[in-house]
Image 1 (spheres, rainbow, N blue to C red):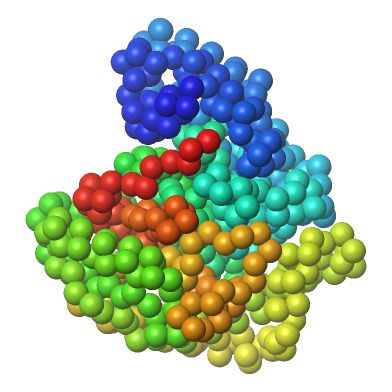
Image 2 (image 1 turned 60 degrees about the horizontal axis):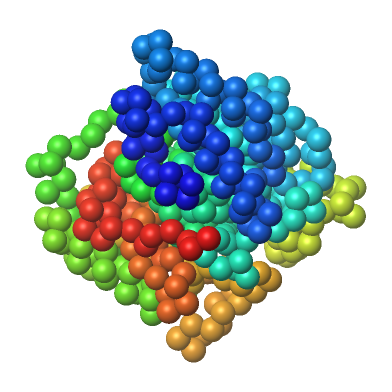
Amino acid sequence: MGELTFLSAVSMAEQIRQKKLSPVELVEAHLARVEQLNPQINAFVQVDADGARRQARAAEAAVRQGEKRGVLHGVPLSIKSSMEVAGLPWEAGTKLRAGIVGERDAPLVARLRRAGAIILGVTNAPELLMAWETDNLLYGRTNNPWDLSRTPGGSSGGEAAAIAAGMSAGGMGSDGGGSIREPAHFSGICALKPTPGRIPATGHFPVSVGPFALLGVVGPMARNVGDLKILFEVMQGPDDGDPSAAPVPMRWPSGAELQNVRIGYFEDDGRTPVTPETRAAVRTAADALRRAGFQVEPFRPEGLELARQLWWKLFGVAGGMVLGSITRGHEAELSPILKEFSSWAAAEPAHTGQSLLETWIDRDVVRMQVFAQMRDYPVLLCPVASIPAFRHGERSWQIEGKTVKYLDAWSYTEWFNLLGTPGLVVPVGKSPEGLPIGVQIVARPWQEELVISVAAALEEQCGCCGHPAM
């Protein structure tokens, strides 16, 4: 059963097309895996077993009848519970939305279904997605399949844990400050934060407007880069419900184009230290990309610290103001993690019209400055976070003699939300405790195909970190 559920999504679809594998058999294997492991991991908040079986029988009938099939025909996927899926909980981890069920499929869910994917269910998230770990008062805490005493990250922690544990072949997360990439890093899988608007966030809650449209995205998560590529191709494309949408055609770089790409890498940002194994992972990735034929040189763009500060003014302060209108008067129903986040956001003065305007202008200026530097290094390679997966409840860590606080540990992802760049995580190493370590590959906006291509070359050189022994 385990071996079947750890096949790549590409292999699953290919074997179904060749009639070597039955969609019904594949779905039953995944449902059995969920039944076995979800009580320990708590990744899924609801599994639609009956619906998945119906979808699988229909997929099998289509194969028998020789009907035209999509690239994900019969492949079981999962969806973060912040995205609307018809008939499934759409609560975003908060008691304030308890019992809300999707009335229709969000556009990206509909695209996955049209490609033949089978939706197994929806996965856990922290309340209103405001944490880098996954716990809430509705469904409780999600555990990391590599070590149940640790978090799989957040806010797409349920999604990452389900995929890493072989309960789902892949799926969708969302990311406003690392919420796709940090869980991928913690859980030993691959994930893509796209440019805002490249994949429609229509149907996501909180709604993709205001600060969340500037910073937040939805994107694919999977166990390998090849699966990530297929999911991206299916999900991408504009939708009127996403204010950042743009009609950007897909363009995959040729081999010759890739060989001329210069990659700049850095092991830390000069402010927030990273663990020794994190440094080693970046060096390993840099060496691997050199072997693959890329020009890889040390380089760290200027402006990252300002980007971090501006990100907090938008995500923390402005985002906190948006969420405050939702939670005001319901403080007794909020989870401890959300209360904690709200206290951090409230520690700074609320925006005035002038301060918000200045933040917006400063954001545009720093983006132009960083992108100008990236003309010489169109791809960046760097850590995903200061640390690997942390123990439940931890809030600070000692690294290189310095205390790293909770919000600072993820600054390596936060910059790229402010800058609006695509960022992809690939696992390349492990910590002394056996925890996965990923690296982050970044390019300028709308160049998802470039980061996927570079990630594929890295994965080919490094392999992957395997999967949890569960």
